[in-house]
Length: 404
Image (cartoon, rainbow, N blue to C red; front, side):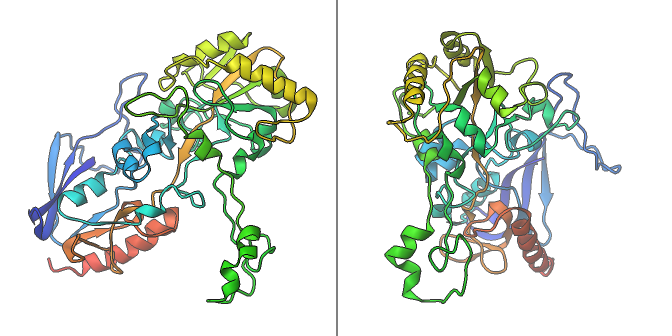
């Protein structure tokens, strides 16, 4: 079921008394058969379109983040209008995963938000990253055939690893390079070291010591690459009203495949093709084929020109455009174009909660009977199951003590 609404005694006053939820099954895209949970254990098979659930003590919102909701995520970063951005779990949980339903429902009854500035900063897990797992719509889910989610992701992806970017070029939706490909794996990383030069470990940290913010410390401690910023920049293919940046494509040839030993076969690559991986005998043909991808609205207009310039740079041993240290010519057919997904992992912004995990409104007052945790809550920088477990324990303990 999908949680649609939080029901309060009055829209902006009183306690929370329940929720409205809608029927949201998933169906096998090949057979149309409804997918069933492995954990049913004889539970009632309820198929009413809409149900209302009375909460005698409290409602705990654990609906996850909003990475899959373009309207919400562009509130915090307008570049997130790009529809090809994927979020972890989208094929496992489904198209309504990470849709911000908890945030929207909370705001409708007066809840406040928190931690929004933490999203999409370059030094945390909420920042978009260019994946090294190429040619799949589900690069974060790591699925193989047999898992129900594989029916929707259709490919595990060809993992070229951090070193594989030496052998490819990354181009935007018009076929132009935009960054030093070898630096892509470090994009978004930021390691604070104390004292300076200690390579990411915190040694003998002294609170309030001015050295923490000295120029020498800052220059020596923070190592940042901005490939995702460059990937999300507007380009010649950006069009009104969204001005989206378009998908990112990794371009390489058969010689790169041989050097890297990459697995370009099922289940790493979809069979039959699904529009996220292409192969052609010429670059001109490849540039046109990519329009079969649902997010690519035009051919890679400059691809041939870009590859010719890159090959010339490889011959000279100097990349004057982006200073890539090691280059290899791309001139041995067949040629390949594999989507290099921009991924979103965490959401750090969400419903504002207090130390008891109670949701508070825009006046700072507790909304009685409403709790939240995990990525549906905002203001924390913790990640994953640890965050969800701690919030769940706090929220559950306090909710259980609510008057019935």
